Length: 208
Length: 379
Image (cartoon, rainbow over all chains, first blue to last red; front, side, top):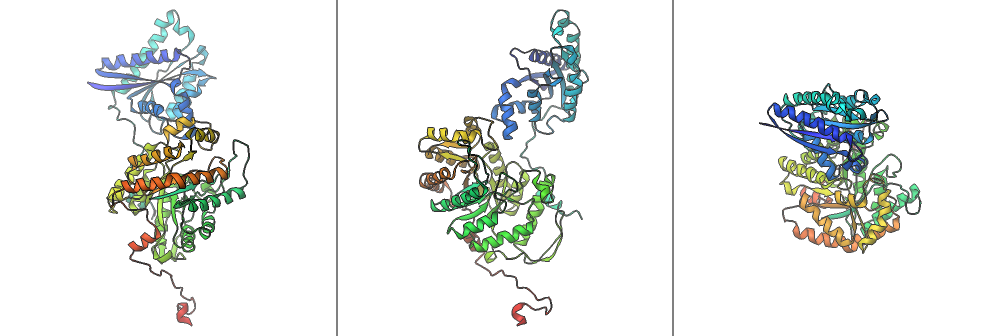
């Protein structure tokens, strides 16, 4: 049985947060589909609120404190990433952006990513398409077609069992499909590994 | 083992009174720190090289030449000399001249520099940082070892029949350290040439240092310069001391909180935990410093950063007193007793001279353009 891990990054600021609630439901949907496909799945939540100060310290000092290092390694080692942010001022919140600003370059290349967002009004829903998706595209991640936005009305009454639920299931299945067709993740790249020989470095000396 | 101080040469406001020293004061303070370092029994003074405010040391050999004339014993070094934006020909000339004037009390540490805008001021591009460091040093290495050099590369005009003068003192080039925080190519470069490797070890977690030194040692052995534990390793370190550790923390905190690089970021306590910074009593500094050996092995040079972030000269000189009187004598004794006999000391001019089998007069005699004869023949 293939073992798969899903990193679930949530940038909600409240506790409890509707952003985390959406993230958990997306993770469960992806897990259910992966299990149906015969995988064993581990879900590893990363609650950015807990790392907020460390993220800023990393931006200022250039290195992550130990707890943030673990969170970054969790993201780097996962087979799939679920990333959910509240929408502030028509975009991801600053914490979400700052966290992905300190993820090492190339970490998310070819990584299946499912994006989600929450907001005070459904009029924010396209922020997923004009802000969140382009950021992950820039990072060369494979963002699944269905992005999930949850507005206040989605959590109440019919919404909980209606359109939002169907969308979560579809998005989770799309992520599972992308994870399933890739070999298991090999973990974070070693930044201290020497990738060329000194002779090669020296040989670059003379273009002739 | 060698102990010393290295200075960035920043002009920074003293956050406790708002006072900003002039460039002149800061330059003179750096000289005072170097002289005090010798007076209290330290071995090495190293200056940074920077070409942008708020830093003053743009001309390290001018400063080190002056210090050489006012000291007797101190080894003069750099932290770091920019191998990317300086012309390697000028480095070869300047540091050979300094070596003669200082009677061999000179080595240098090469680094790339991480300030992007500086590169184009000197006709370079930070994206070529590693290739510049590789090519420029390869040329510098040859200029000190070959009297006449023909050379062609990517980054500077070719050389034909070029002789860098003066030739190194006694035919022995200054020892070179390569400094890097997290570029494995630089550890590889140091290992390839059998040069020293210096880990910054102040602003970053010890894991960086451990990995880089481990790689350097392994490759040093690979290239046949000796066993891994015989590689030449230097470490930075950052300390602030008072006899009573609470006093040290109380006095240093405003400097820490407002310091360039890490100020307004992590707390003093977090940064002390995450990096080698030690703020406390001399005994705490001794204990922490002895602990460095546990993750890098026996090493040859320990430099402390003690004069940045607006600390007044008087305070810095008091730090040097504590280092010289209470810390370094104990560290010297402890490190020496722990180090096995086959692990060498840091190379000095004397040890390199002995290894070379004695001095040679390396003077290159000029040939007269008109007569084709050397001056002494033409008489």
